[in-house]
Length: 167
Image (tube, rainbow, N blue to C red):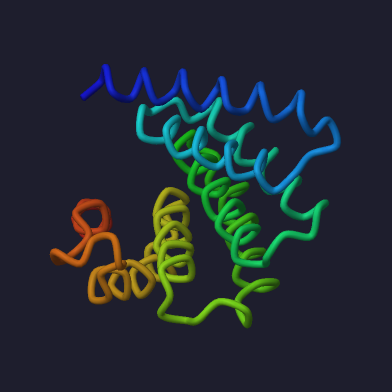
């Protein structure tokens, strides 16, 4: 499995390099390639680099005026990267921005909105703000995200255990 992630990383980096040369001013294709690299970096636990890649993807989506959903997803993943690095206040700010600016464009039960609220709950938990974190995490637990339709999100379950152990 790790070998697959390393090969995927190599392919994403090659695609990003090629697209940077082909589109020096940026393009949707480059933003999408950065998105793929960002997901791979998160999966591999390389949160510092993932944060930079997601910030670049979000800035590129914003600059080229790509669909709101792409920008919201990139910003949500940026918040996730910040949170995984222990930058809970930065993550909270980023995630609240996604919900404030892009919330109306996202269906409240759509996967990006659900994930963003889940990540916000995790960021609040990281700050010890349990009363604010609990409803967000419970919502995420009760509304499995489309990619996790097998049942409850195991990450949310771990975070709820962490919350209740801390109280």
